[in-house]
Image (cartoon, rainbow, N blue to C red; front, side):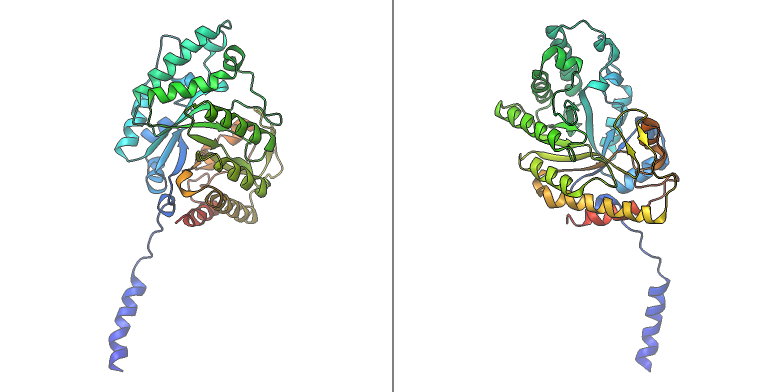
Length: 353
């Protein structure tokens, strides 16, 4: 009886101790866990800052590092917002991923309105990438050097002003300049739907092989990974495996998972689900868990640049406004509270250790 009496207070003390707060997402992965965010949010929004600090160790700016945001005229660069974010990332030990040097939709109007002139456009690209990349040398870990150069279904080159004026060689040229500006940065080709459109996937892989054969300094492939709940999982795993076979770094760069559908065009949403149910929330959690596990299964550890969600809250998701669609694609809800998706993602990330 004496031993039992002495033991009971220990049980009481244990029962009264507070439950330990779960660690954040970043502690559960062996690779960087990132989020896209807007410049004003990471600089001025304390609630957003708190979530980033707890859960993420890598950030990508949604729009503020794109060409139209920093190079608004031929003689004008706007650096203030990028400088602020670079400083914030360094002070808070966050990896900063640069998005993006050359993108058809990120090209400012003054370039798109130019008369075709390959020498002039090459000069603009050279001055822009060398100026930009050199300014943040050693402060930006990696860059999406060229974004979305290929078309869905056919895998042919997108007819942007860059392609129409400089030919497919503009892609190699951009990578060479980015490497010249910052030889230590990881340099990505980034695109959407390459995880589910195998024609586009193989066109991308052929392009990568050609660039490598020409000794172009490409070092990574970015899968945007804007997927749906009904996206075929075997196709995604096949795409990741084939990309990993290149030996390049693999980044899941813009992850979100929607319930409804769209045709990839502005306003092209197809509203199937009007209300979010508990069953849908649980299914989304399982999908996020599967995606993390698929990345781990198919990409060797030394090639995992990381996984980045494209915004972490349904409140700030780009999906509703772009597609004119009501959806719930993120890890946190409108009130900035973690959804089951958050916990599913955390569980999947934990399998990397």
